[in-house]
Amino acid sequence: MGEGEASEAAPARATAEGGERRFPCKRCGAQLAFAPGTYALRCAHCGARNEIELDETAIEELDFGAYLARLEDGEAHEDRIVSPCVSCGARVELPTNVTSGPCPFCSKTVVATGRSEKLVRPASLLPFKVDKRRAREQFGAWIQKLWFAPRDLKKAAVIDGRLRGVYLPYWTYDSGVVTDYTGRRGVYYWVTQTYTTMVNGKPQIRTRQVRKTRWYPASGRVRNFFDDLLVPASTSLPPDQMHKLEPWDIAELTPYADEFLAGFGSESYAVNLPTGFERAKEMMVPEIRATICRDIGGDEQQVTTMNPSYHSVTFKHLLLPVWICAYRYRDRVFRILVNARTGEVIGDRPWSWKKISFAVAVGITILVAAVAVFLVVFNN
Ligand SMILES: [Zn+2]
Ligand SMILES: [Zn+2]
Image (cartoon, rainbow, N blue to C red; front, side, top):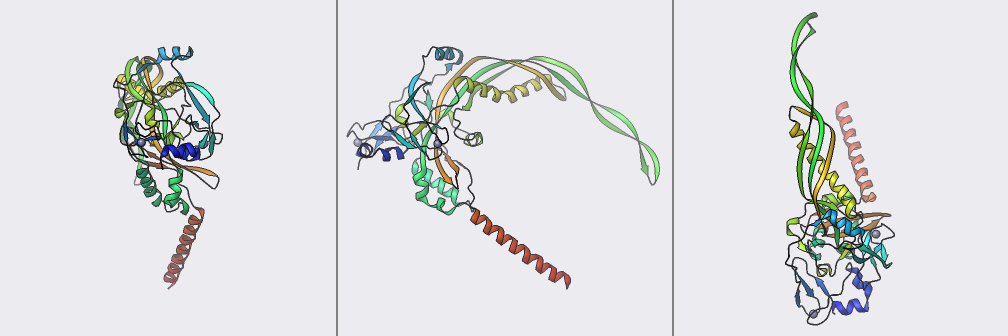
């Protein structure tokens, strides 16, 4: 049966794959889905391969300041239908032909509210490379290693039903930074101290070398340049999980085309362009501070004030692919993620209290037995 017929007759099925946009097969008209690891859409009905026509122009870095001004004018946007998940707040983008579907982040049903928002269009993305079969294998291997995991999660079918491919929104920023600073340079010097110690019950005078620091005022100006600082624009996943998904092969970015999203869900950004740049500024601080410390020199440095100014700021809005398996266990949401470029698995570890209690009971029994044996041997 063709995917096209399936999605027309049973929308629930179409949304089970994380949502589909309308891309009819050139040969038979059936619904196409992006084929991970390729640059083509594959027809499940007739097997035809439909190559995605890539925009050959280089992926543009957009000027931050000019773009912000255009954003305020309402330009540089496109209308996208965002359906916030009432359960977890994820900003799910359901395809135009779908009215409801499971939230990829928490597995509760999201209903299209039809709220249209003006959003910055993604400029580029990393297409899915890890397909569903490999993602399932990765999940399976990972969960098998968890001794305390609830048993039903180890069933392949359970994972399969909850596995969804989603593109997560990100910003990247480039920026030059000029930073005026004030601080102090510490230079070590050594002094000889005399002290009294007791040797064989008698006081004796000794000397020792003690390190001291002399502080001098320091000030100056340093320059840094940051290239492609990656800022997550989704707030649906905890920051530490987003961080663990890194590194991404950003050098492989492909110009954005709707076709790459065929068969996959996506999320709209929840962190907007200016707020994203504030995050990027925080990410710059350690490197700027390190540059200042090198500039101050000496043996130790203190930075009192830092006054950075930013220039030549450009940005890109991009989408990165993950497989998410969200499941509820005892009223808590757990998620396992697979970086759909590298296959790396990141996840919450659900603990089965039944198994843990059993393990603890076994442990205590062994301990009690060991103590008993020890006491018997010791007393004899
Ligand atoms: Zn076809
Ligand atoms: Zn949700």
